[in-house]
Length: 320
Image (cartoon, one colour):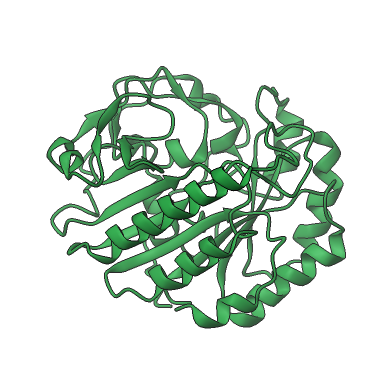
């Protein structure tokens, strides 16, 4: 892996009060993907089943019937074939409702896509409950994992062993946790035990308002927690989604991102490509990392550089 180290923007302060004010477009910020046709795709198929039972998740312990699983597999194989046949560079982040790596076809797709020369990165959001042996067949210079730790679902030692195995194998990955008060001690323990090179991110819990003292506790674990603490005012701001980043569903429907329902085309008839252009965000706010990371005024492409999809800051662990 040839990491590209770019200037790091200082993380938002724990108070994050500036995020309550409208942001202005950054002056002179270049488009890193412009000119080479690179496209980042957030793919989400029909899969909605998960092997975990988190209290805050509507997909907890949900089971997909065989018909839905067959449809999900067919959709993923069609998508993988489309990527394989593309002429321009592509990066893919799988953002399933459920747990993807519990299914063999996602593991196979990760391996296949990682071995395509025009795929810069293939990543997936996962709870890491699966075995890691399949990674031996992948090109680890292109593959990455976005791992979430659920303390109520897996023992600390078991999860830590999986993370250490990823480090031993040289698998690029980030690890994260939801910033619920009950998770604070678990997060501190995990940060202490993880290798220094593993970035531990913290997502603000949906609907929770953090005092400055509470936010400071989470920022001590994740120096970038300030970006997650408040929703970002986004209406009218420049965003890469709809231009160099798109969201794709299992049937090929293309939207600018997961959070804007407007359809801009279809992957398989090519209509989406005619719709790619610079766009301002139409939503009042953006409160999810996979959305706001693409808001240009936030400058998070400089913070994460080549780690945008897998949520790994450039130069970690040497952050301010």
